[in-house]
Length: 510
Image (cartoon, rainbow, N blue to C red; front, side):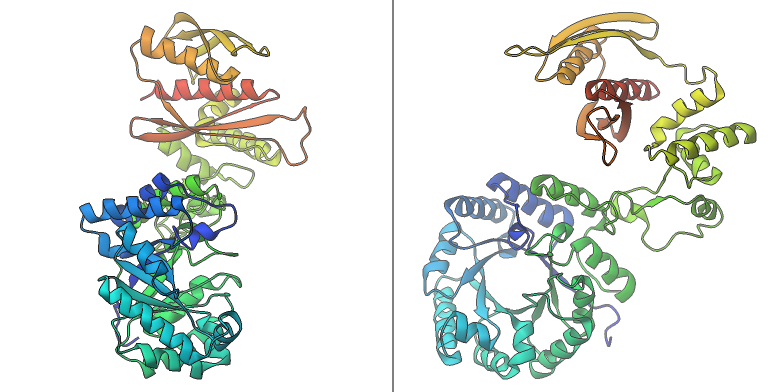
């Protein structure tokens, strides 16, 4: 690159193209929350939040976001996809309060002739009419050249004809999408350099799709070719195989190209989790930057290397992204992995005890049981046959009922610091009733804080039957700490209760 530190503008289209993911639909307040996170927390340069004329609900969402953005002087960063349909899209966008249209034009001759059934000259005339009306409404115009990638492959003269006709207008950005995800990085470089050579002073955005798993590679090829802006989505949401994921794009831009963006990396993981929750699309555990496992060392040799001058670390330090490195416990765990986890818990073991605990964890790993850091004190207590755990909270007994037409009930007896407490409660389920009774003891009887349950996951082994063990993993929030506890039992409620009692003993140490 001529410029060693290119400044790249990021336009996030999670709320428009990302919402075109099969099965994804954001309600207005979710769209507003995501837009706020993108602009105020992540610091993206622009957000594309909707397509014009979709529905009344979409109109309400766009208006809500624009009202919020206007109060914070961010309205110029909010964009809506519109169409070459005379005044219709522009009137819709203007009524929402939005002041930027991303005008969807045809970037290939085939799309122009066979979808619109118009000549290039007729399409250009229609585009100019929309641009002129946008000027009257004081609405800024960016132009998408839909199917630009196939246009450059099959009809480059058409692409140049369109841009030649529009380059002297008020259009601010020409946005070049690989609409069908057909390009490879070498083609992106070839086509983008042709565009830059012919139009050196024009601002080009590149919009990648991931059909061949090349979206991130193609984005970087575009940057190498001098593109000024990139389109991304959170978690790679988008039509078909999705778009380029913002987290991956940001990391590679910074680490491999010394590129400058406005993105606050430390907020990437948190925003990713919010979008995962709202979209219902689960993030793969091995997805770079934001996946559950990507900062988890499994092999014992890696943990040993981290103890010796960070031999297995790279520039993707988890702290950059608001995360921490973890060391998995399982059949490939060595003593170094276990020591790392023990250090986090403030525990020390002699060599013989460490050997016994390691053997036990490997045994559990062979059974494909999940072993968490929170399990370690219990494993140590079990293996070494002593009372080192010294549980301060012990469940003495409980009774839960479930009857048709009646709310489930729970009655329990629990020992806390040597004192027995009993309580009963109803709930929306057996476990809910149990937790409500516990909460009464902590908040009412003892006047203490009770953790917030923020996630509840249940699984059984692959191919498991109705009598299979149930694994319940519960995520808790207590003060500034978020942690997980696990219970394993043939009964789901019993497994959840075991995980809850583990949690109570953990917070006793705080």
